[in-house]
Image (cartoon, rainbow, N blue to C red; front, side, top):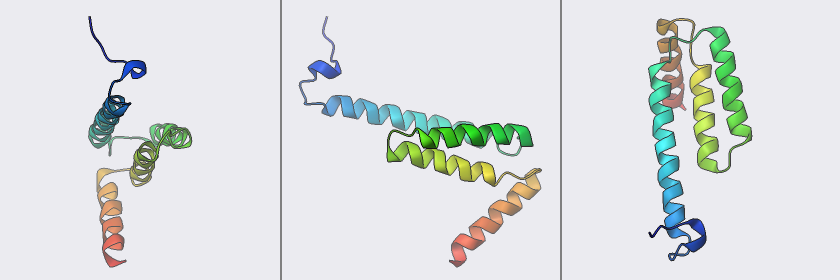
Length: 101
């Protein structure tokens, strides 16, 4: 039986680092998929809870990539309106500001 652990990595940690990068990538993709499925269906209380969780993730982020994911999710949550139409208007206004500046 042969397996590679972080203690006996013959590649000097490169393999372990690669596995961590793949794991982080999968987490990011799963987060994006989950985020896009429940955008306009969130009520005020759910939004407060989600924001609190994302701020906690941001405070405890172990690396810049994890912090960036939490930051992007916070922005997305802030731009959820009380209806799909208002959410679309907020998104359009944000896009227009980005393009003008």
